[in-house]
Image 1 (tube, protein in one colour):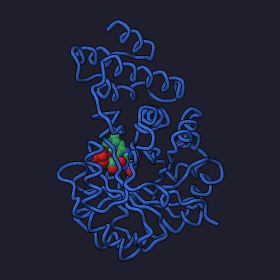
Image 2 (image 1 turned 90 degrees about the vertical axis):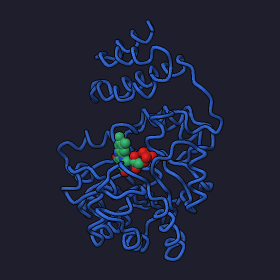
Image 3 (image 1 turned 180 degrees about the vertical axis):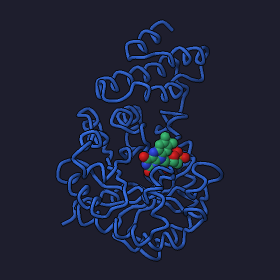
Image 4 (image 1 turned 30 degrees about the vertical axis):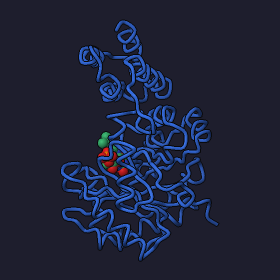
Length: 328
Ligand SMILES: Cc1cc2nc3c(=O)[nH]c(=O)nc-3n(C[C@H](O)[C@H](O)[C@H](O)COP(=O)(O)O)c2cc1C
């Protein structure tokens, strides 16, 4: 018996916050959901989590932390009706099976997502993530093993090719499996995040799914910077939803239909909220410097922002951040 396939019940077009390593942990997800208008953001993802790491007793505790969900985030997910999906990666079907079982049995996620798109050399060298585009039979085996280990809906996040555009063959391969959803970044592995996003290839993938397997939900992804753009992209390609990643760095309030200027106080307020929640959640288990990549998200676009940012980059603790912000 399958659990609810929430992908089928989402409004069209829906919006998702993309999984981002060292970014979309429970702290950042809560922060973004908190400032998003009700009914605008529908799905959030965890950071990608290693199936090998989950299966090895040694070091497992650290790996499992990537799937941590704070009670305050849990409450917000419920309140706002947002779905939470755990993203996993690896190259061994058995590890996917065991990880899927473990996550389904011990944790509380709405879906499982398999990373078949990360272009980073370290993971590609292991035959995982985007490398699976070159191993379609293994990719299918991994999907099958995951489906056998869970009754949650399983999705795949991928790209339109490895070293060339391969939408036709790669989508054909994925659409014949039992996945419920697919997020498609309109670039190939080789270009990472450079160059244009091929929305025409995403549209082609939608046409293919309409023929091969209309039940699969497709999200388009790549360089979407506003809700208006999300709506336009979805309309022109026929995707069911749009996934937004770096758009939140440019505007953390992106998931609001009415856009307005945010005051320096609101921005630094968000920074303090992030810093406090980060400290309370991770204590010394995560390096404080991870927080620094967020400073430019919050501290920009106002007089004195550059100077404040420079001061914040020197901070070594949450207390120092508080002190610097309170004096600005
Ligand atoms: C800092 C960072 C970390 C990322 N980590 C992941 C990840 O863990 N899993 C994944 O599937 N994609 C990851 N991505 C890719 C994004 O999910 C997304 O596909 C990509 O950034 C393109 O979308 P965007 O232009 O809206 O950002 C990451 C991207 C960035 C910028």
